[in-house]
Length: 430
Ligand code: PGA
Ligand code: ZN
View 1 (tube, rainbow, N blue to C red):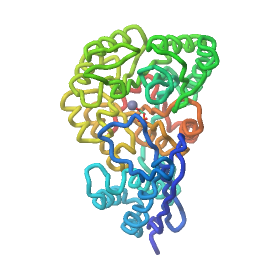
View 2: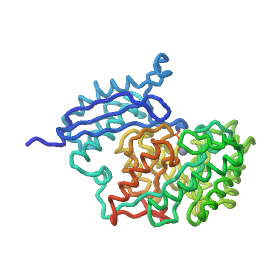
View 3: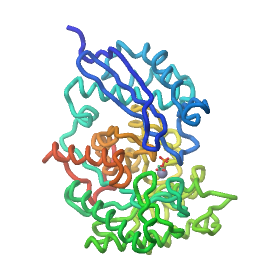
View 4: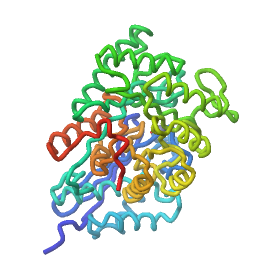
């Protein structure tokens, strides 16, 4: 009998992400199943990310077309992969790395490679009639992640003057994922009212990840509004709902210092700023507090407040094991933000997650600011059972798609699922 997992065909097309930019959809077919994946795209990208191949043809989509990447799939990757067993994820990813031949996937494009990598996993799951998370990891018990809900946007994701890119809430003080999500949504909606009252109708404008983008210029003002919304909803800040920031500090790094809230801060000033914020507010996580090359300052901040505040590396590590290892060696950060498209294959992303876990770092599976309705990362977060996911506000279809998928997984798992809750920092990927 022929192997039902044999890859019969690969099809790729140019679709749209949530900003209307072209991106790649890949379909991988076996005899009886097909798996589909869509590739996300960031805007506050790390310098060391794997390369997203764009056509740079100004006549199409302002140069952002991905026709060359599609061609690489149909003429180079496809012929090498058709006929392989879809369960051989590592072997397939390795073939693509070899075909590409560069350290940053600039030849075939990380977007082309990732689309195939994820679609291969999905078709393998579907061929075996398994949930994707089950196919990715067999576990006695799965952990539903605490959502980092980005409810107020600044930086590169919004047209306001806030330097800090993401103001998030983490509803950790609940027993069940769905209940926690509900708390986050109630706070999000009330925050819209609080902001509209204070700043007029523009207070309710939203940014790229669905969080409000009010005309605020000051970090504390934004945090205060969120605390008011939490309290108005009857939840306890710091007990049930914590605050988290993604500074994305490379974005406001300038002239050897940082431009924050209209002031020029030295690295030491910025350091003190975070320390003060963590005393004044129930701040439990800070991502990219310094620019992407400053491992030293990451290490110092981790040393100083890392016990009570999770220090997350995104642009600094770019989900890359070599950069993460450097961070581990120096004690820089204690958490890895895992974005599959930063590194470009599922196998490498899983390796980075494992490296993080085996060194005591937490892992947060993350979306990009440019997303699609694809829900792969929801399943990945449950498969890794890493305890945290960052996937935007509970608004805009490309964000709610992930939350809706998690609601479904939570329901399907029943007793086999458990909410990470206030233990979210204890889960380590193994
Ligand atoms: P990006 O932002 O997807 O635009 O890079 C997300 C983040 O910085 O975490
Ligand atoms: Zn980030």
